[in-house]
Picture 1: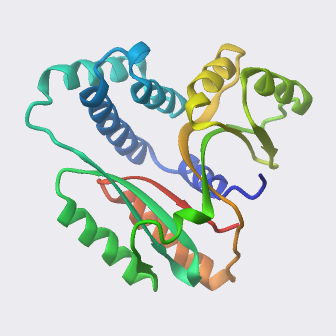
Picture 2: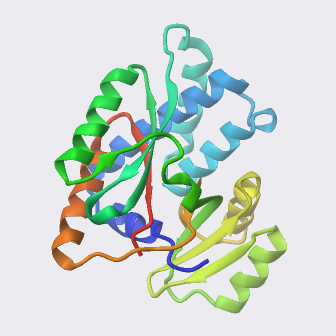
Length: 238
């Protein structure tokens, strides 16, 4: 399952400023709020909340922030109605793109996302137009700082992971979507520091771009990720 395009996203995220990290915490807080509203504040009985907590911890969100978000969501969600929306389309150079958003105004978000696709030579399509080219997986990433490949391979397979990929900078572990929390918690308990842990889309095949188109596409990704309503972006750029 090589060539997973989230590597580029993780590398770019690692280079972002503390201000952007704070914005990331805000987005994760929104996911916590939706998860609590859907299934309650107890992660033992709320699988979605468990997964969001795993993602928060992988992104170094302090436990105090996580617990504060859960408590706030439990008591103050009456007037907040975020909606899960998935957008699909083709970006610069025909790269397939999936955008996950949480919004309280679907017209605003759809307009914003469509504008970004159009601005960089892409086009927003209908639901399902590109998602058939991806597999839904749990995706866990670690910075490759001399980690013993045999050791971590045996560990993650014992924990229930499906596959593992090695890059010079990033190690990516793939799981069934329902197992991402179990595997990420097992890695953390074993002393590994995660760069990210979430459920997302892995492309079945990847595409390439020339340098000029690559720069344009990365600007498109930046603009999507900077949008307050956008939670995650996946693509099939190799």
